Image (cartoon, one colour):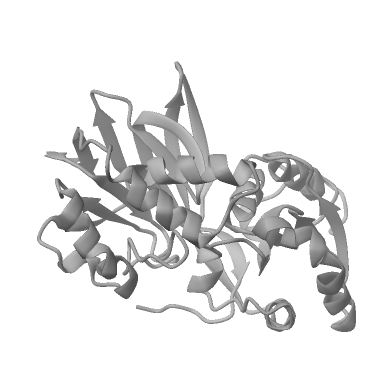
Length: 317
């Protein structure tokens, strides 16, 4: 712990590359709106992937307890990982807000965060706060085991393949919801459905699985509802297992990914739990909040009420 005095300002971490460069291009406008609303900020631009995690730890050590993430879901993920990999202060003393400037903005979608900057800044000013659960994922990268934290949704199998392809294109400056959808459809051609063992709160099932989604939130991929009934403050993870579905079946079922009825499909199962473990004879890759991670064996957990967040509207059911 630290004895540094608590700073009154919002520490604002800005990803200049978010949303195809919108973070950098629109920052002057966004910072001007903060000034107009008399919201005191201290800002820092990231220069590389992963840096926000390090910067947040430094900001907390310097006495900041209020953080604004200006970017997309990946930037918010890095912020949360900074919060949960420090021992400077209890995580429940920290408040996180967001100005969404990313491509998908799926976490903000769940909380009614406006994409219009004036509206997003007003949400910060209104200062409506709730405690938000935080997911954990432990995975392997080569021979070593690693742990990450996530706010929204993690995935295994097909979803992670699509995210991996999309992230490679994002690194080359090509990113949009159309790119994600193209990668989704093109990956259907070659993707195999491995046999996986899934242990949900101690109960095991073995099945062929197209994908497994683990939701603390409801939206991913720019509006898809893979875990449509998840709540961010119920202390539980929502699990959606898409079993052995063929390519044509998947394409026909795409509509249900967007309208929230995915769990009505006979080859899709839904569960709620606090712990999940997935193993597979072949390496099955994972992603969390759109960030590509390592591979199975993978374990998920939940930290109830892990951190405070600023919200616009609150989902209650």
